[in-house]
Amino acid sequence: MKKIWIGLTIVVVLAGGVVAGVYYKKAQTNNTTAEETTNPNIIEITANKGQTALDALKSKANVDYSDSADGALVNAVNGIKNDDKNFWLYSVNGTAGMVAADKYICKSDDLVKWEYKSF
Figure 1 (cartoon, rainbow, N blue to C red):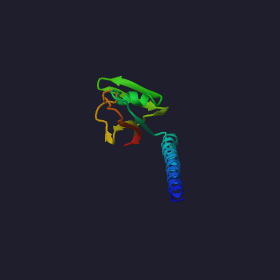
Figure 2 (figure 1 turned 135 degrees about the horizontal axis):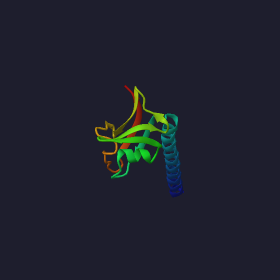
Figure 3 (figure 1 turned 90 degrees about the vertical axis):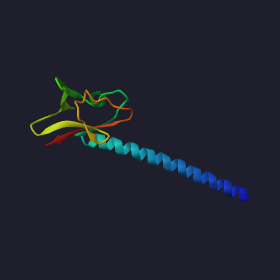
Figure 4 (figure 1 turned 135 degrees about the vertical axis):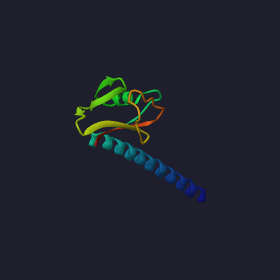
């Protein structure tokens, strides 16, 4: 009888762990989706190895950019245009981009964050 109770206890604990894991995963997914859909001024992308910061953005958004001698300049993302005070800027893993977005080559799983910021 004791073995039955031990076995039943193990099954209940394992089942609880599985259910908790499913709800945790669902909550994480919902949080990411909510961030992306509620703030059009922030776009986060997990980049692929060898992809540029500009390519990462183009994979998730409609991008208007122009080429210059120094590299690409992002003019608008999803219809939100640069103006006299606001610009689209990127960072990779929390560090501001120091070169044009088409010049920065990402490593696998870099987090590229584009923000519409004012100065």
